[in-house]
Length: 161
Image 1 (cartoon, rainbow, N blue to C red):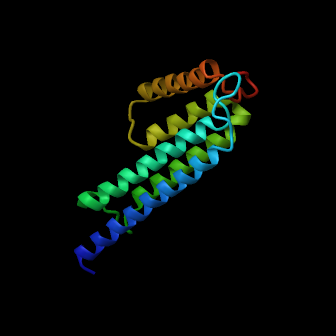
Image 2: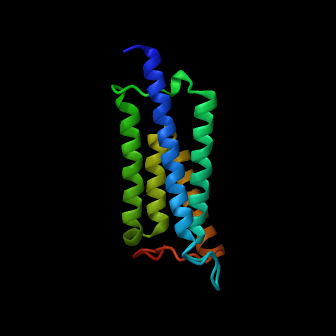
């Protein structure tokens, strides 16, 4: 198989993935309307899905347009024999799913901290002190923003943190 046909297939795969992302975003955006955007104390049940849906649609459209008109840089190609990217994607999904499962048991801050440590290490962070400091600061900042400022209830876990 020649390089040109592989490149054309890769462009179509990116277009399909971008359209899929935009489609899921539209679905989430439409369904977010069945929940209140704001309630008496702050963001309602439709707040988060609205913004996730909107950003998914915008990202999907931008990727589709960019891929269609600019094409793909050859470095964006993905060889079927390259295991690194596939394993990294699977590890990312596993880290996100694990954090979602652990939120109720360990609380948001500890689960988010552990997830960030794993993801930062997975994507190339080498300095442990920087990695731990950043993960701790980010998990605390996100918790403070949502729990304290926006009044979104987040799980505290058995330790109350």
